[in-house]
Length: 86
Image (cartoon, rainbow, N blue to C red; front, side):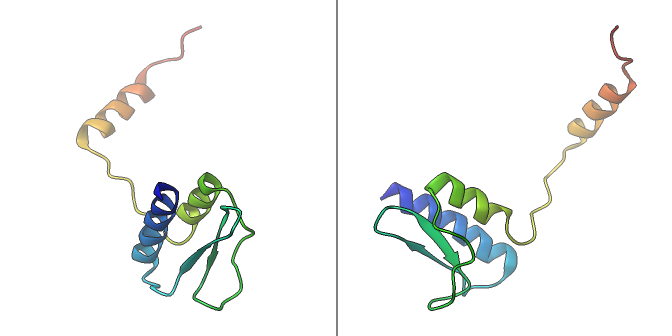
């Protein structure tokens, strides 16, 4: 059951990012997953293994901006200042 939970969570994140609540996932008898834009709609991808499906769904729609702290910014500045070692 955790397989479908991981896929369902990825789908929930996609719905939240896009605002499209009609997205739907289907699990085949062989344990593969595919995504549609709603029940009865054609698949948006070929049936995939769980990890491939989650990666596919996570790449769809607008992406959330990564949170960057002041420490991250300062660290990246430090990295840019250091000359490469020969």
